[in-house]
Each structure stands twice: as structure tokens, then as C-alpha cells.
Image 1 (cartoon, rainbow, N blue to C red):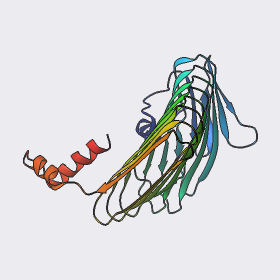
Image 2 (image 1 turned 90 degrees about the horizontal axis):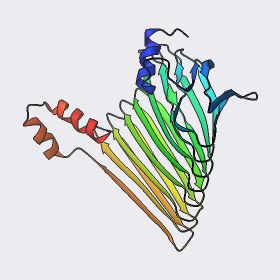
Image 3 (image 1 turned 120 degrees about the horizontal axis):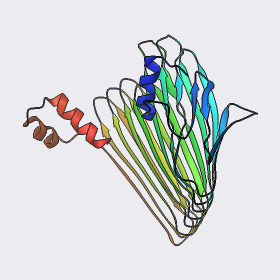
Image 4 (image 1 turned 135 degrees about the vertical axis):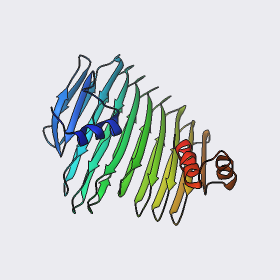
Length: 307
């Protein structure tokens, strides 16, 4: 379908899409699915009982991708969508999601995406999600994603989530359970400024023997923005779990980190870390000796930190 330049630019920002992608994809625009294509190994089926889609990936599927971007271009729109991913055994795929909100009006626009991943034994998924807001109106850009996963034996899920900028309020919930030998790696990157608010809630249950979870959050809070990070890892079997919050705080921002680990098995190995602080003066001084202004030096440091 034809999209205007603003929509096309947003697709590049949230999903690196410069043209119609190869393979399976689904484009949601202003609360409706407007363009969709399945592939030989990946079926995308609209739900009949509620808004959203089922993405069904056949066992053994390799080197394929699925793009499922969402765009909101209207002020005052509240969108709710439910997406379920059923990944067959020994499949190995990449899923590119993302939501962009363009709000030039006075009413709030929001998107709530509820994603559930069901990975069969040996399945591997890399899931990439970017959030972005723009527009010169007074209406807020609100994003509240929820992601849940069930990993079968020896399954592997890698999640990369990024909040680029422009999102006024977000509450991000992620949780799930792991079977024997399953692994999950979750990396989030968040930037807030102005009076923005971001809250992240992780809850991972390591139910299987030799399962593992690595949860890493990197964030930058500027101006008067606020951030909260809550991570809970429960070791219910011989397993390994690690959570880490690393935040740069600037101006009058506030950052709260609440890591929680619960060992319910004598052979559960669980670690949590939380570091919050300002940019080190020696870092700024070093870059400024190379000719950068203080602001340019800060931008370089932040870009490297969130890379």
C-alpha cells in the first residue's frame, strides 16, 4: 500500500524498512491491519476473537524473518493488539517489531501490544523491538508493551528492546518460564528526557534444570524524567540467572532500580547488579581535549553507552 513520507520515515526508524520486506510481514496502521503476507514456512493469521495476529512458524524453518511494525498517525487513538508467536521445534528465525507514534494533536495517542511467544524444543528466536514518538502537538505518546514467553527444552530467545526517544510514558512488562536447558537473553535500552516516565518490569521463572536468564538494562535519564527498573528472577531448579541495571542520570532526573532474586533450589546460582551514576568528569575532559564541546562530549558518551 502507499504510505506518506512521514509513515515511510517512521518505518525506517522503528524497523529499518526502506521497502516492502522479503518474507512474511504484517503492517498495522491506526489500529487496523492494512498489509500482510505469509511465506511458505511462516503463516500470519488474523485473530477472530480480538485484534491481533497469530504467527505460526513451521518446525525446522531457518534463516527467515518476520516484520510486524505498528504505526499510529492519529491524535486521540488508543490501540490494543494481541500477537501470538508459535515457533516450531528447531526453527531459527528473526522477528522485527516496533511501534512509532506521530501525534500532532492535543489528545493522547497510545499503543498496547500484548505479545506471547511459545517456543518448542530447540527453537531459536531473535526478537528486535524499537519504540519511537514524534509530533509537535500537546497530546502524549504512550506505549505499554507486554511480552510473555514459554520456552521448551533447549529453546533460546534473545530480545533486544529499544526506546529511542519521544515516548512520554511507558510501562514495559516482560515475563515467562523456561524448561530444561532453555535460555533467554534480554537487553533493553531506554532514553528519557523532559518529564517522561518509563517503568520496566521483568519476571523470569527458571523452572528447568540448566536453564538460564540474563537480563540487562541500560538507560539514560535527562532533565526531569523518571525511570523505574524492577527485575525478579526465580531459580526453581539448578540454573543460572543474572540481572543488571546500568543507568546514567543527568540534570534533575530520578532513577530507581529494584533487583530481586529468589533461590528455591540449592543449586540455583543467581546474581543481581545495579549501578546508577552521572557521567564521569574525566570522560568529558578527555573528549573535550579533542575539540568537542561539553554537550557534544555528552552526546558521544551517551551514544556509546546505549550502543
